Image 1 (cartoon, rainbow, N blue to C red):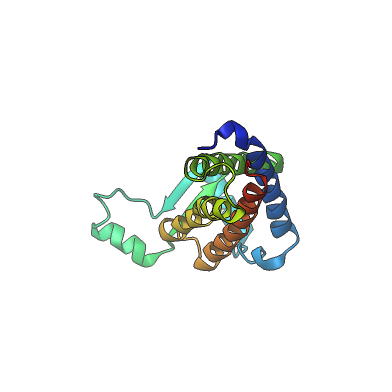
Image 2 (cartoon, helix red, strand yellow):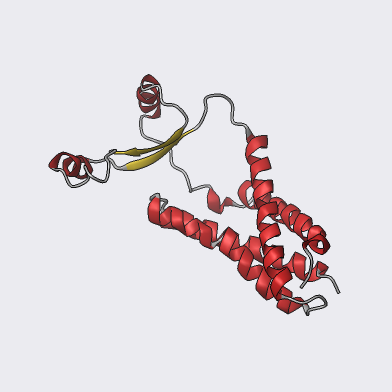
Length: 185
């Protein structure tokens, strides 16, 4: 067993490496630019939403309780459409530092749990590939597999899910490489 205290450097460095890689992926590489589309007649729709005085949160439409789902009225709304899930954020300028900070904390949390897993399954002094295999698998569960649920339950287009899972492969390989390199000997 390898103590978590011996793995603080790979946890921290893997988070930094993944953070930098994700910044490059989203700011330099073009393949995520098609993830979002503009709404037709956006100003009219924004005015209607503003008039509804929505508070920040997650909304589903048409909304109905499980009990109401089989009523003729609910079924008609689903046939009529549109059907969607909408996130409403607080008004004001985009707070990019907050989002980036949360992403970095998430990277640290992934590193922590991957370190916990590897520390209990990979002995001190293990070969690079043994560390890489365990850490890479654990990291991919967090960075890649976790995105699939958004395609299943939230209607995220599968092309977007696939791109995020691909990013997860990159982040997992970088995390695994960092841990393999810095694994206690």
